[in-house]
Length: 491
Ligand SMILES: Cc1cc2nc3c(=O)[nH]c(=O)nc-3n(C[C@H](O)[C@H](O)[C@H](O)COP(=O)(O)OP(=O)(O)OC[C@H]3O[C@@H](n4cnc5c(N)ncnc54)[C@H](O)[C@@H]3O)c2cc1C
Ligand code: SF4
Image 1 (tube, protein in one colour):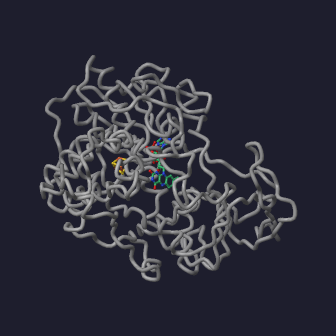
Image 2: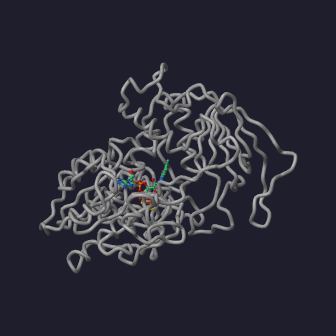
Image 3: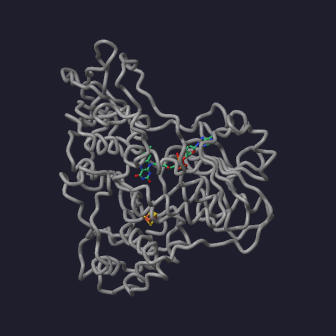
């Protein structure tokens, strides 16, 4: 146990400060300042090493949280990162981006702030990279078996690293020009700088994983070639089919899906855009610069559009959410140790913009084919359905509307239909307890089987699917599995 009296000495959770808003809006860098090891040690000392560590259950990866809190408290950072890597291939992603269900289920959270688990996680891995402790882990044997991983998001990367280390020859196919999935082109630079992906890819490449970006499987490589050339396939193509808003005026220019908008900004922030692509203000093809922006969707993707629009210099920004404003503290409907429904303020919200709750958009208005505004009204819930509140109609000016209403599942056309895999009622790829689809030798991990979810689930499923593949190829496996498949979305 860290310090038996730690939680009595340090009664509150402390996190690194965020850079001042005017400063951070001038660049795309991450918003957090450095956090000293002394402060982190104090925070780690708050862990009570509970007899039943509910945080283990809270984390889909089964991260060994009390163990690394204790090791950080004792200044044994190298042992700490080894225990962290034992369950998580990419703590630099989860440590920055996870909503931390572990903290929601921390026992200390019953009557105090929970332990700062996520911060301990990210400091452990960042320090390990700084110290040069993250080195390639070469496989002991080569099995001669070939595995294709389709999709290079966190699920595909986790599966690939596990399978490469088990001695298989692994190729990751990605249709985008760069590896990383939503980590690369969805999540903005200010939430996670892309250098964190690149240094992990260096390790993976040195271990022997092969990467083939710019290859759309099912188009550039046929399904027949895939099956012929590889002994097993892992489908990790994500849930990329977005939810639309088919209301009058949807056809107007200036209305875009979040995932049409965000990738441009990420390419821009990475310096990947040729000047010929930029407009006269040096902005990418879809930009919020000087525009009145309305984001429809109050979740994380909406917040990513908000922070991006701030940095591009929007004239005004509204973020609409159809659900009512959540309570300030944990709602009674989500008691400990469940993930709490409550009002959250992300770094992007702190930077400005107006959040509007209980609002439904009825129609987009426009002139000369371009959007100029929208008509909306308030709603309330009645018997589980949204009902218009009469007399609340209003109009709002908009030159850019961003739809951030989530994703309905994987794309069915092309790869999935050609492979002939069975789908669940929700339209995700169905799988058995080994993460194998209805087609023998074809496995599935992450959002493609689960529906739109979280990075931590994608990594957990990538690891579990890798164990399923290894068992299929070798008759047995030593790769760990912590979770069972479920089709329920977790986001
Ligand atoms: C804007 C945004 C912000 C988010 N922020 C967070 C966050 O802060 N924290 C969090 O936990 N989760 C977040 N999420 C959710 C999280 O990113 C996903 O749950 C996670 O990335 C899913 O991982 P995946 O590997 O299953 O799929 P993805 O990351 O979606 O990767 C799938 C990849 O497969 C590729 N692909 C698809 N079909 C083919 C094909 N036929 N051939 C080749 N390649 C193909 C796609 O191009 C894509 O790159 C966010 C999602 C979005 C959209
Ligand atoms: S991965 Fe997420 S749930 Fe697991 S320990 Fe880290 S922050 Fe907590």
